[in-house]
Length: 314
Image 1: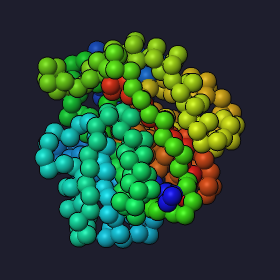
Image 2: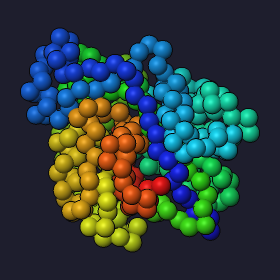
Image 3: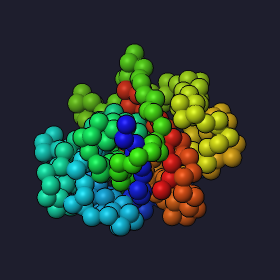
């Protein structure tokens, strides 16, 4: 069976940096409270013209440049997002158009909210294994400020905008472990963006925190086990950048004592499906991981869905 190899990781963030002090002018909050509760110091917010598909395309251009690849090689585009305001055409087809891909690629959007990116990577991996794709562009892109209630101090301090991307290719060897995915349907309403809530992000933070603290460490360790590795073999842990107060204890309970833990949430905020590739791309720019290094990707959130795999670095 054909394997999948990661060629490069890329990202895009809007230029506007929003420190906690700016939020103090909007809702009853302060820098000390935000950092103590969620660990965020600043985040990026997109401008009116920086749409989900535009940010996704910018991340795609970055990953193609880093891989030294041509957009015409891409035969599959998958975009993971929960914040696209337009239902059709989908974001993936708009990205293909912006990149000028001429080969009639398959274009797929998926929405499993915060866990969307590992889901999308797995779908691309499966397509490559089945012979349906040779080169896949996988993007997580969000403009969460479009679905943020800026009167709710418990959620507006979290949300941010950005995009991250993987370029994947067929390979004789497998460089991505089998996906471990699932959800807890009875707790699905704990994180939501529903029409009944004016299409704004809302959550039961207490329920999410309990779930991530008590249930997810074992699942994350099972992801590593599926990769036929021990926790101490993992070079880096890149979790969904939800909240530093979730990331740090979850990473500690995984037991990967030699791993670098991505904490990009402190300066990028929570970007839902974009957060894993965004965090890994920025980590690779500042502290490059060696080729072949095993990296745990593990995401969780809306629908109380989760997904994870171990990816070998290019």
